[in-house]
Image (tube, rainbow, N blue to C red; front, side, top):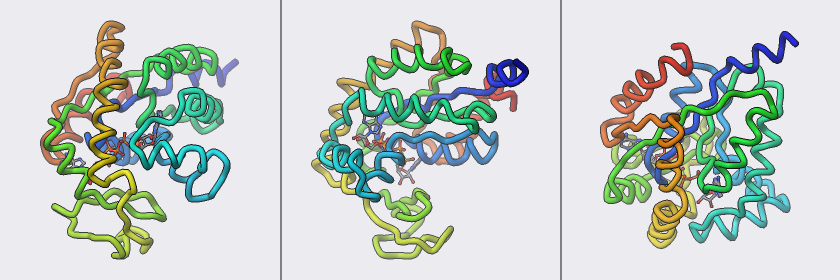
Length: 229
Ligand code: AP5
């Protein structure tokens, strides 16, 4: 009974925003500061691809093309993750989920079932031109998932990650054709969630074209109430 009361007070944050808006970058800062569990559906799917699991083989064909993995697959993995003890204890930051109306509705149904509160949804707003620029210059660490950018970190494919020594690589879906398709899919399927959450009074809109540090300050200020920071 005691555990139930505690779980209901932990934060549930959703980072909404187009590909390249800075969800992963801000997520890393937020979990460092507030300690909630970072649940990135993109990271989970990439891990499944790297491990060569059945889920990974299924997801890869969608991801490489810049398309969304089917709702029922993604909803299933998120539902399972939300039931785990660490999420119940520390709360959760959802990065890249939900990104369709069906996913948003599934989340609204799942959260009360696992005794978690409704999410506060942060929409990171960036122009399409800047998104293309950020994605085509992004590099990541294959081992620890750290996110870099050629424009200000100077790291390129094959370099060692300064954080863990892992290999720096370019994501397959950060090639021009996949980037264009991801933006098209975002505008068609994910952008409508902005209005969905606005109507429910759960939306915080953040102008996210500044530096990662500037955006981080604005996001944290906007979240003072939900995370109690
Ligand atoms: P996912 O991994 O979620 O990719 P995404 O949503 O396309 O987002 P990104 O990771 O590309 O960008 P980001 O917003 O995290 O930006 P980042 O911080 O890295 O999904 C990948 C694929 O998996 C999907 O296409 C789909 O196939 C599948 N998938 C995942 N979730 C799914 C779901 N729920 N349903 C169905 N399918 C799903 O920043 C980008 C770059 O910009 C970096 O280089 C960074 O250093 C730089 N940067 C960040 N902030 C700033 C700033 N303020 N100024 C300048 N540069 C910045």
